[in-house]
Length: 271
Image 1: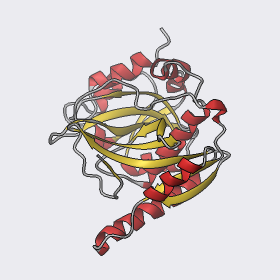
Image 2: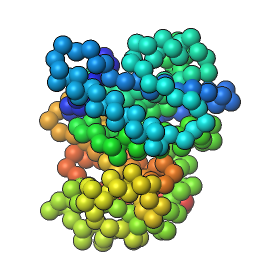
Image 3: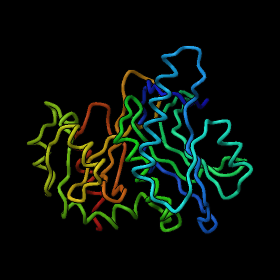
Image 4: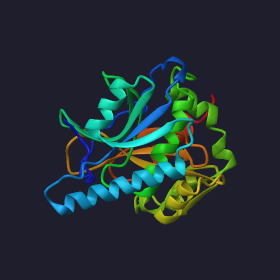
């Protein structure tokens, strides 16, 4: 089942290796409108409505700040939004989707079209927290993928090769919370041959929000899986100024590891 509320309490696991967005051919990419789904605000409990209103305010502000496609945009609650795009062939819908199905859970920003709600693309997001920076990441990356909808046959292989050189040119921000006693800053430095900086969550969020062209960000989303007491990471090497995700992969449930750094470097090598 799918639901749109402001609380994100999904527990994620089960490692996967698929690239976390789907690309589908769009005839000419000729959509002229996008409808962003708002949370329902008619709950009996005021506390639920307060959460919904905060979510709605957040997505509206993010769209105002980060949406740059040549499309008009609207904000509607779910039922109204999907009815609208069903009757308007040049409109698509964008929704933050929290999904639990067959023992798996995930959070994505999904773009759909038509009465059949065909999926155009989706961007995977954190499941246990959702900040202003996460809204910005979702909008920036989804727009990049939309603009390049038909460019790559296999994005999971082609994107790292095309943009891997950026690791040598920019400083990678790594969140201090992603490191641990088992894998610390010195361990990261021993493996990663390019410039990097261990930074606070606040600095990483600011780089994303300001679209800082000087940095890359090791952005952590969540990987869907069988429900357990742990959350599995999905590591994104993200460029904030244009929404490019250079590479990404599914990691373990105990933070960043040697295997993650090795895989980032392997995937961004042209060899």
